[in-house]
Amino acid sequence: MLKVDKVTKKFGGVIAIKDVSFSVKPLEIFGLIGPNGAGKTTLFNIITGVLKPTSGHVYFKDEEITGLSPVDIVQRGIARTFQNIRLFGSMSVLENILIGFHNHYKYNFFEAMFRFPRFFKEEKVYKEKAYEILEFLNIADYAHSPATALSYGNQRKVEIARALATEPDLLLLDEPAAGMNPKETEELAETVFRLRSEKEKTILFIEHDMKFVQKIADRVLVLDYGKTIFEGKPADMMKDEKVIKAYLGDIDVES
Ligand SMILES: Nc1ncnc2c1ncn2[C@@H]1O[C@H](COP(=O)(O)OP(=O)(O)OP(=O)(O)O)[C@@H](O)[C@H]1O
Image 1 (cartoon, rainbow, N blue to C red):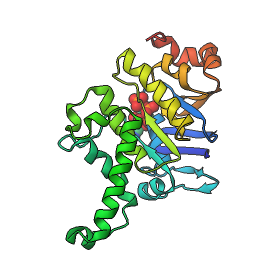
Image 2: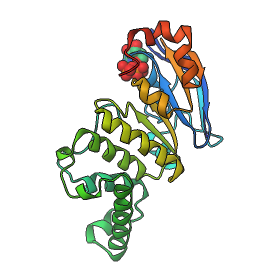
Image 3: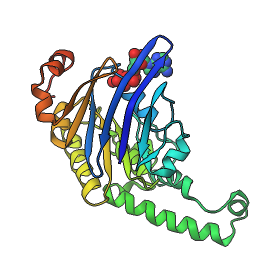
Image 4: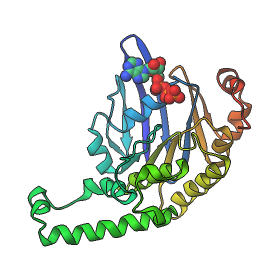
């Protein structure tokens, strides 16, 4: 599904990513792990077209996507959420989701402006689809509430909903459990499993919560100073000496 091949990213003299390669299989739940500054967000930005790699290649569904624009990459089927929630606070939950459909809208500006019949027809379809996503995530009751009035856990769900509205095959989640209480984290894990089993999504995620990582990831890649230090099953990662030395030794793995 996704192949990152020998990717390097330099910012001036700083090497943020060094010769990193890995592949994510269809329907896999794959974790990107590592200490702050290891290069995880840089890698997400390269995959989603926000940054161009200094060298190396990215392939999605066997086609090269290296250096394509973020819009092109969304249209090919990759969507993401952000480490810091980026909702439009004054808009309702439903409106936030409708923005996600923007890429798929068939009507043009003049049709929308004069509200030609096609506009109304399509808007109805997208509203129905948005409700379906909100119901899937158990937040349909909040459709008309301002996004920022929701609890932290539910705002994260709205972010996921907006990403789902672009109808991706691969979903990138940047620290989805950050700031969540144990109950919200538990529910998030169930949501991720349902995204795979019911919506056939492949998931690549960044996370520091090791309990969550061990629960949901099929495989993980651990980065340290931009280099891969481990790739494999989460249970093996927890016992790996390099990972313990670079990362796990400093964090509370039970948290
Ligand atoms: N736009 C930039 N310009 C210069 N240096 C950058 C830029 N973006 C990232 N870096 C550097 O690249 C390295 C990797 O940063 P990155 O944000 O990818 O790490 P991370 O693993 O996502 O960390 P965190 O867990 O804190 O989000 C760091 O040394 C960072 O300072």
